[in-house]
Amino acid sequence: MSRKVDGYIPNTKDLTEMAKAAIKKGVNDGLFGTDVQEPLATREKAGCEKVIKGKNNAYIVLGRDRPTSIVSGGGGAGYTQCGMIDMVVGLNALVNTKRIKKAAAGAAAGGAAGKDQIVSPSFASDAARIYMSQRCMGKGGIDAYLGLTRTRGPSAENKSGIGIKADHVRIVGRESVRIYAARGQNFKGFGIGGEPTTLGTPISKNTIELIAGREEDLQPAVLGNNLKEYLEERDFAMTEVIRTVINMIINLIDLNITAFMMNPNLMSHLGQNINDLFTMVIVSLNAEIDKINSLGKLIIEGGNPLLSNTVFIT
Image (tube, rainbow, N blue to C red; front, top):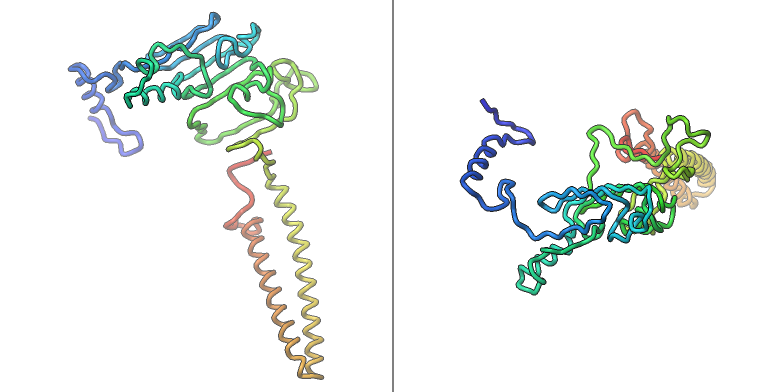
């Protein structure tokens, strides 16, 4: 007896059986995962490539480095040692979508949208791609293949690379996700310098860059423990300054009281100094509250901590 599932994954067994029965009787093309005719471009094939092609614009290509046309990359230049695996869905999707919209609007679209087009792969116009290359050739390497500028950090030119691009990309680890820019720590047999690049050259300075927008806006990340230590030192210095000022105000109040006893007209100076004392006490109290909230001075963490307990950088 089937049981209804009250979670994220619904019980679709009955619906699946109904769909199979409908398919036997005949349904519209494409419904319930049946074959469908759609205007699709064809990927231009290089002679060295083995192409696994699906029915719905999905490709797995094994060949030599080739980001775009057959004259591009290491394969186009005739290089060896530049093997490639290119997985793509939605070949020429951006251009094809525009052609379909024109055809739907009744404009001249040059025939059926996308039909009989021979196109090269493109990180710009293909819907989603995972690209792996033993050597990404040309200035910029994998960055240039993805249409990205690079003005800092180690060069990607003539080095192995993996490019992942889609409208949205998700990397999910149910327990943890780690992003490393480092040589292997426990590999043996590479000598004093440790693991090199796949070309045998020394690994240069490791960097991790998270960019949302322009590379020109990239700034160094803050190291939380170092920032906390710095702020604690500044806080200690500020506390000493506040304590000194409070002592000075108290001394002034003592002097004003003595002067008031001799001359009552000095009452305003006494009132002002008392007011200053209360102000400094409040400033000191607020500083302590900020320190508790931000620098983790309590057993229970404050409401505005500087240090994350889930994201770490080096």
